[in-house]
Length: 461
Image 1 (cartoon, one colour):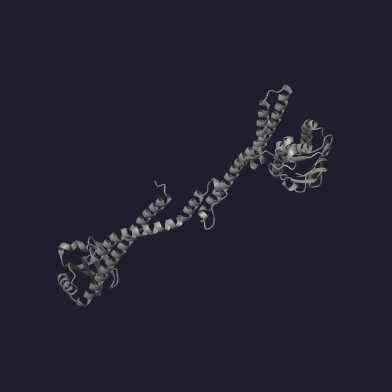
Image 2 (cartoon, rainbow, N blue to C red):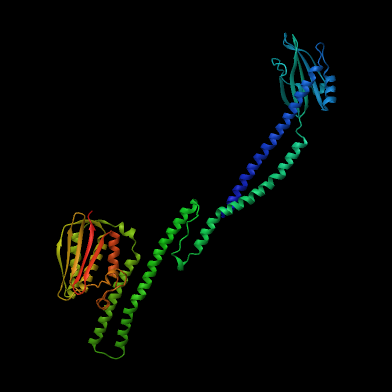
């Protein structure tokens, strides 16, 4: 019915207050009405007691004369009286007299003949209130006096009270609504603060988060969920941004080379062999671009949770053997040999494709940075707690200054050689990410102009 939470709360509060005020007003009015009725009963009792001394011990009193005296004394009008003399022995009314026979119906009430002296009973007879009291008792007779007067239901007090309730109820309702509106606004102010914080977050400041300090517990979980959503959004945005920035940065150089080669080739007619050389250079750069884009996509789109769900039981020794067979073709073009020193049989729980990529990148780097006619060795040993995968080369090595930075994206320790051999500076970044996904540790020891040793520690299942 209402889209606004504030209006919905006010509407419910309005309905509840109407019900509460109506019930409370009815309770007050009925209580006051009952109090007025109790006053009438008290009046009847006082009049009944006042009559007792006037009764004679002998003979019958006249209800009319007693009614006349009571009206003069108490100024109560109309007042109707009935006097009953009850024969205890025969258990029947011996004599009775009425002040007004027309109003005899007012005394059509049960007679409590077994009551004690002074006991009084009250009865409603339309707009009249009737009482019956045993005023005294002789040896064989009980004397009852019954009085009837109009109930004071139309008293000025009740009229004023009803008028006051009719006027006060809407006023109280308005006051309550104003107070409720203030309280609701105050209660919802944290929600408004959260909305303002959310509105202030844009593409330029995705790292900002909604502050959870002084946030009510009822919406704290919502805010935390939104902050988590921002984390996911920021990570996705950063991946897209990284891919865009990295791709534009890395594509600039090979595209420039390709353009330069083409422009030079078109400046004048050349021999077929020269065109072939140009095409080879363009092909080399194109392959480099393709490889770089594939690696960029890999870094940008893979999700850790998605990758973890694809783990299965693997034979690590077989993965190493298959990877070495594949990399030997590449190594042959560099006049480098890749040999397996020792591989122990091993079973692990991992993602086969990712491990092959990691091992392949490490072997490829070892081959690229090795001298011609040299060897790259790979081995797999074991201890009580882990397997140790080791890759050794006797290439150019890595300086101490470069070693802490080699896992950063697009970082190249030997930039000239990396470009020449088609490196993108992304291989070790991918290796590090894959090992982190699996929870494996990597250690690299290197000495310039002597070689590099890479150790990967794989916990035993």
